[in-house]
Length: 249
Image (cartoon, rainbow, N blue to C red; front, side):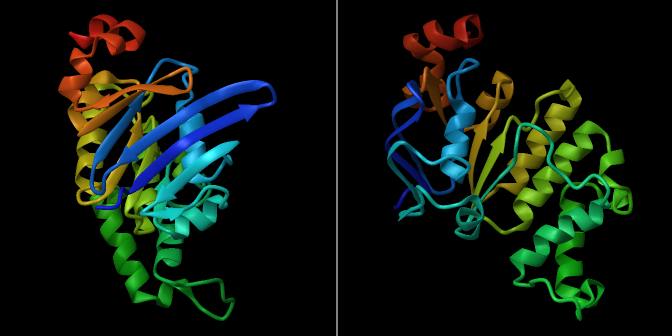
């Protein structure tokens, strides 16, 4: 089966500084894949390369078999990849309902037209209501997104990310800053909403990584030193030395 994401010999340089070096990565369709590594390893750069916010200096990136290196982010999104960011990225002055509806409008094929009333689109209302129910924010639908708690804003962002109907979802540190209880709730939500989709996640919380991922890739100094199942990564001496340390136990 064609991989959902394939990164082939990708490098990224900023001037004379090499951030990503000979990066090779293959993520299967329907797989939950975590990318871990110490601060400065190049995880966010890798995310930005795959999602089009950066172009590789060399190498090739494919999405569902098609070359996407060099495409702009919205072009990659239209091909079926959606991502979140480390910093919560919602429309603070718009309501929860309006935030999700914006994503649903594009996914259902509606474009801007001043003569149309979005409230007269039953399929948009239905899908928006379904997503709000999925992310447990129906009771907050009329609240401006900027007034939500931090955990609720992250849940809303996940809802926006999946609203477009993408089959590849990339989440950048989705549980950062959450309490233990909030993290458990977020992981359950991510597991449920990405069922049947490909998930790529960057996360520092090892309990989240080992509890959620089917496979894990370890990035150190812009190079993947190991990829495998959670059990294989736990037992890998290179990983223990470079990153996990005592957490491997």
